Length: 489
Image (cartoon, one colour):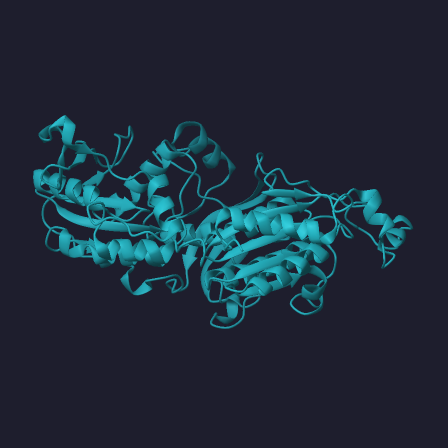
């Protein structure tokens, strides 16, 4: 694809690429100067040095690799236009290196960036600011860079540390961990409980797997926005700014206030709710207690995680052609409609192919695109509290994982492996597809000339050669009932 609208004539013939969510976040932070000293995406040597020792090749401390994954066909180009999901050009990458990641075998491009326009996608964009757009206050600035709301304990600790430092407060909601809108609203809701002139600036920064490096990256981001200290749970060696670790706080059940544990009679210390306890309350639809979090935050938590009985869920059935996925999916949809209480959408593989994915071939790239389209629609159904039942072959684990992430950003996801043996699938072959594949008439046919990657993360495994259609659909329904997504009869 080549760049066209909104570009100078000299750039209109360049190829374009829309990075994934993490790549778009990195791109926005690179263009905004948040990732300084980085001016573009890293090459293999810098990446290896960062992974090995937390430093760029020139010795500059930097905690995480910032790389740009691309399809192999884009590695032959010297320049590339990077665009947002709506096709708006954001920057031109001048390619200095095309390299293959030794751990994933995926291809990467490295090089400096030339900004074309400021990104305008993503939630609460009106609140976002470049570091050079904000006024720097005199004196210390304490930042809290968080992917979670601030409950009463964290609010008390933040006020205590800010008072001790004599610091202004900067709240940086980190977007990209799911339920971004609710996170920002929850943090805006408690501004009145923060020191005067506290600022809230959302930053697109998906979490990294390594917690220590994630903390260092948050410190770099906070420092770019003028923070002199970062509120954190542990000190971080190599941090560009000091990490201020608050003293332990607890809820004093005697006088019903949060305060430092050192000031509470040990018999009266009540710990905060664990994430598991909080999740159980929300799953049941029970109120979150006022002693734990302000009511405005509790309301946003309930929006982000509604009760399971009304929360959207995708049931994703995967298996070989002829395994019985469509039959089980239809039986499950019928059972749910008969029970009532839930909106049900059936995304059957063959039907989707004729409508949503008409024109796609059966190449690996197009098969992956077909599954992504199903995942996108399922995520939208789930976002609005519906039940999405999907029944594609979906042979590749990486694509199934991508769909799981898409759906779990808005609700819940259940993977059902319809593990009917290949021999039985071939015996049932009503369309003669297996026979054609055996004869070489259908290339890249799953189970014959192309692999099926058996799921190791299935929530339920079915073999329809040993189950009737009603029994198989009943087992999936039982899973939904046991999990609380569907009411028991």
